[in-house]
Image (cartoon, rainbow, N blue to C red; front, side, top):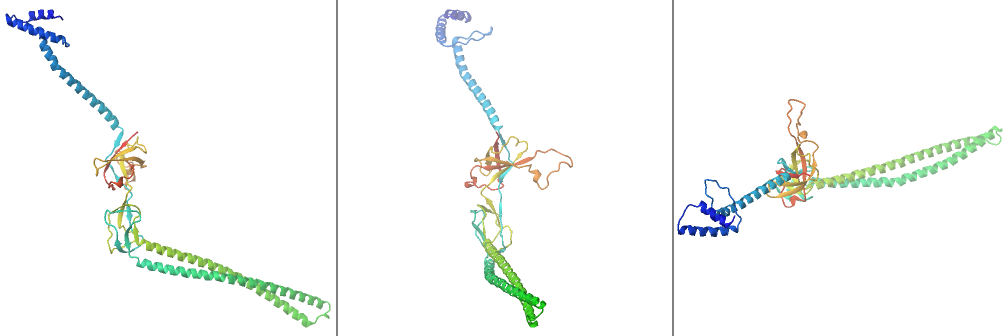
Length: 405
């Protein structure tokens, strides 16, 4: 639109004015028009009953609307960012599965004596940190020391009996050898006597002139005597063999007795060592009930030992574990330490729901059945050693977040 057209329109639309005021207003409009030509114009639809605004008012209106456009654009960007962020958060949040039915768990060790006795000293206090093998309680060792001395004496006696039995073995062997030699001598004499007797008997049958009756009787008696000596020598060999076998049996018995005595010594020493009750592994002392002077029995609970190695038992709903896998990362939030995140991984799943292993498991085949979502215990282990700087004990409430793949 040209300047002349604007002027004609102004002249047509404006009310009639006379004199100097008309000229001043025309000059002002001309300056405003020159300034407006350097800026973009905004064309507005005008209603027939309103006069057209001048260029100065249009410029002012445009200036007022410009910040509004920036504000609307900024709000739109914020809304888009919120929507995009919300979608991304929802997608990421859907990859995490959490539960508040979870707690710190461990295998608590009950410390108890293996022998009965009077408590002589208590070497630990409640909640004390102990290492593996550290003495916890000492019992009176007097009775066990006496038992050890008696066992040592019995072992020495058994060793003496074993030595005596072994010493008799060569004697028995020599007696057997001598008896066998005597059997050989008696065998030779009996053989010679038998030959003489047979010769005398043959001479007697030939006429009886070459041998007297007395010689025949003497040779007969000698043959019988030598045969009896041979039988006696053979019996002596049998007796010597039996004695040798007996000596060997005595040696075996003495060896068994010596081993039994050695076992009694070992047991006595073991019982004596049991008078010092030691920590089976590293951990913290809890629930201590023993006191100085107590007489304790075998298996009596004196205190509990909470090991340093702990894990999380999380009872997830059965509808939440379908996509979980062993090794999935877990963020663990412990109620006792707000603001701190422990990291761990899924270690294993229990083969069955927790209710199936309860004292009174449900029996769905009886009564009216109502389906209830069951919970399955999931074992989650910590990465590293969380107990090195944090006091984590069984029963503490946690909230694990498992990131499914």
